Length: 225
Picture 1 (cartoon, one colour):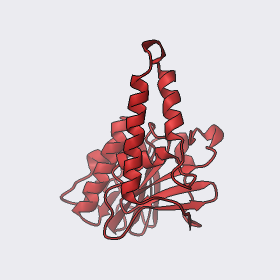
Picture 2 (picture 1 turned 135 degrees about the vertical axis):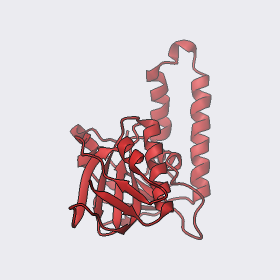
Picture 3 (picture 1 turned 90 degrees about the vertical axis):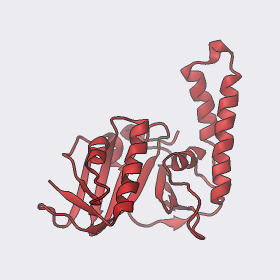
């Protein structure tokens, strides 16, 4: 069994928290793990938001039990969470699973360039709060016969597909970042940043990233509706 040695207890706790949040939205969630050297990237897709979430984890050392250079595997998020040992700062890599379609289409590793127009953390958090309040208000005002899944989805699409400031980033990406624990108060002067590479947009924070692909992924099933 491949064992990941995380940098410290804090990294283990943060990884566990991220996996727990993904499982909150999808009890059968899968995650794709990619690692080289002492850096591990954990990719997930919370279905409520239709974005890719990325949590970077620092490793104390590379792997043992036969894995020498790199790791690239899709596993059950629940099984990975069960294997996390906070005290020992380790996690055992579960048996690989058949990856969902999104796991085959990840953002590029390089080529990212800064995008202008992203507000600061407090403004982003206020934007999400206002959008949630608007959704609740508008759905509560619907007559009973219109309070269907289609009716709720229509209002949700209108609100969450709006863009942030002068950027192309949909508000749903900011909502996802907050719900996954990425949009906490900034550490020191470090604020979230918006970067792009090709068709991809990435909201990067000190705690994790959320990526969306403009125009969706067609038949691969990943979109930014």
